[in-house]
Amino acid sequence: MKFCTHCGSEINDNAIVCIKCGCTVECKNINKPAVQPEHKSSASLVLGIIGIVFAWLFALVGHITSIIGIILGIKEYKETEKMTGLVLSIIGEVCSIFSSIIGAVAFSSVF
Ligand SMILES: [Zn+2]
Image 1 (spheres, rainbow, N blue to C red):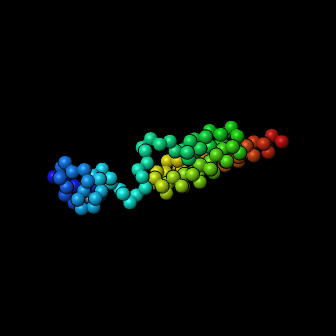
Image 2: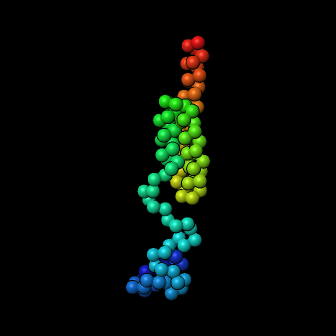
Image 3: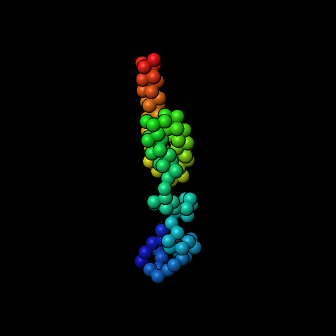
């Protein structure tokens, strides 16, 4: 005996469709959005990394990519409950802020 992954009722080992709920045996999480592919590249993750890198090169570019990354990261977190991209984008934004401050201090101390 095995159990329906959707409703939990006992089903025949050879059954393809659950007799209780009519769901195919593989169709778990029917109420949730389609399962995200595991290795789907995350836009916010990429933007976060770009944000961190550019923070030290061009603070303004770092700010822009990080903020877009944070917005996308929040959206992705709501959809996938993965917050890696969001965290990276926040780190990128923090780096951009630090970079701006360091840049401003360096600029004002030179002149
Ligand atoms: Zn079922």
